[in-house]
Amino acid sequence: MTASTGSGRTGIDHHARAAHSKRNLWSGILFGVGAVAFLDEAVFHQLLRWHHFYDRATSEIGLVSDGLFHAVSWAATIAGLFLLADLRRRDAFWQTRWWGGVLLGAGAFQLYDGTVQHKWWGIHQIRYVPDVLPYDLVWNIVAVLLALAGAVLTVRTRRSRIPAG
Amino acid sequence: MHDHVSASGALTGEVLLAVPFACALVFYGCGVVIQHRRGRPWPWRRTVSWAVGVVVAAAGFVGPLADAAHGGFTAHMAAHVCVGMLAPLLLVQGAPVTLALRSLSVVPARRLTRLLSSLPARLVTTPIVAALLNVGGLWVLYATPLQESMQADPLVHLAIMAHFLLAGYLFTAAIIPVDPAPHRAGFPLRMGVVVAALAAHGILAKTLYAHPPAGVGTADAQAGAMLMYYAGDVVDAAIIALLCAQWYRHGAHGIRRATLRSRAVPSG
Image (cartoon, rainbow over all chains, first blue to last red; front, side, top):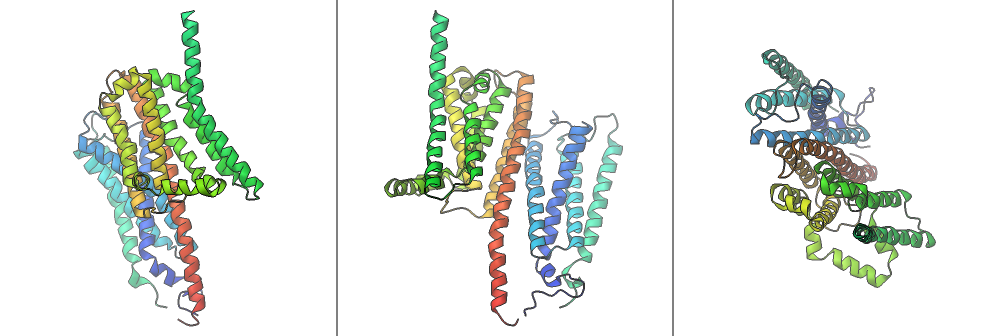
């Protein structure tokens, strides 16, 4: 028998996990980027209608960045879930590392959206109110916390933590 | 009397325009019948996909949507989404080339193969070239006086709709080929191209929202641009999901081979 079925009493295939450690992280990151972009569209654009489809202050580069990130996040949601399905069929899905990726991707994208896209390139503001600062602070602090939590989970699940055998 | 003549003229035009779509249904139907007679039933979902695709494409050329598309920008965009995005997706899933190759006799089938593997045919089914023809064509249309002449001249409008259909088909077939594609590109390239095309489509939609084309009212332009943006998202999500599904199935071969190999080796 080969070592490829390194499952112990727990039924976890550590070998498969280790071999697909990167894919677990990437699947999570892609899904995280997609999920946060989806929430942004559904909650802030459609339900609350705080965000505007287009803001006249938007720069050209802002429009390009918005278009690219929208397309990337759209594909990332779908591709991330197919990668997850692939990990499951290989018995290589590693839940903690995957969630680490999700939080990392979600936090990083939200931080980019809240700083570069909203503030620098002026794609749109979080809400069109006289004082938007509290909104910006909450938005970006949440983003940093998500990314930090993701980083902690990612570091805790690095390769050297996998039990040998 | 004059009205009557022009009305019957318009009717003749409609009938003429419907002919290619009727042929598409009849030829495909003949292929399906031939396959059934030979005892190799053709998958019904492909037939349904083709038939719906032909109807959706025809809606941009004949009937109420086509009429409205001559006048209004929003209706024109609805026609663009139907003819250039949704119909190609459905038609590609119909696998018409596979059906033709199976149903034609040897000589015409060989001719078709030779045509499809010719250099020009291979070039326009390269993902990047197909994407440029498709989304690049849209940018050329809306950023140049072509848009005005399209609204003024029904023949130009017709030619542009035909371009939408052909370029949309080439693009979809290049990204998610169902029919035999001897030189199909790798998954990362196809994913990159579809993301870039979706981005360019979305950026163009927002640009049209911000700067309505000449001769189009602000409200009409904004409604049309939002339709273009969100409908484009939906169709492209389907293309991306189908591309990922092709990647997933492709990966399954690898798993089976790896399992077989590990079984063939007695010890690690």
